Length: 259
Image (cartoon, rainbow, N blue to C red):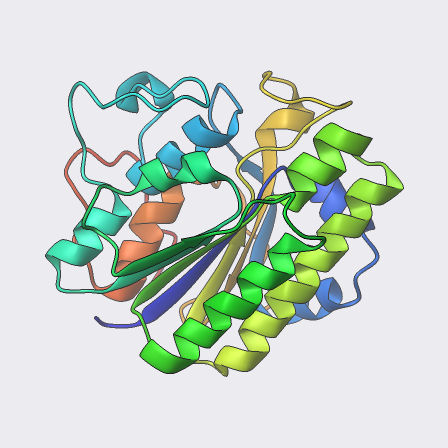
């Protein structure tokens, strides 16, 4: 692989929630990474459809997943995990919501670990611990780290933009800080959300549900640059470009790497 990447998805993280969470590390990220506070997700703005689009770079209309119940694709498209494997790379995944197992096809990962979000307090931190331990030991080419407490315990249980929701975002950003500092420049680290939310729900076309933040920390991105016109469909092509992996012809997004 050309370079290694860690993708962190913070479920349900709104851009204004990120800015209001009070974590001081955000200011440092804005200075050292490229970022956007107005990226757009897909319709419906629901977790599994959004993550399928994140990894397959097509809309739910194309990949066919329109709810949180997985259905086999009628016209299968290779996703990012499959393209990395085809190029000889090794991928791993740490996640706190079981249905996300279906964003990768069987055999495309060298390891994966699921921890139920309600099994422990701050499950996101436990998953971060385990991902970092594996990264330091085995040096995978790509790691997907998924944090769900912002959505489940923050958004749905307490409400978007409540103090509890903002607190879970702050915890997530502290986990991001650990990943960046403990990998010490060996990995490009990309942070995103799948969707936002309003009240205690999401899934609509409201801006609160459709607008997501993204952060890009690594040598291919200009420190302090604010990006615009970014889509969740751009993540797979961008990561493939960083790693030197070929995209599939069906992918609709664009790489955000500029010469």
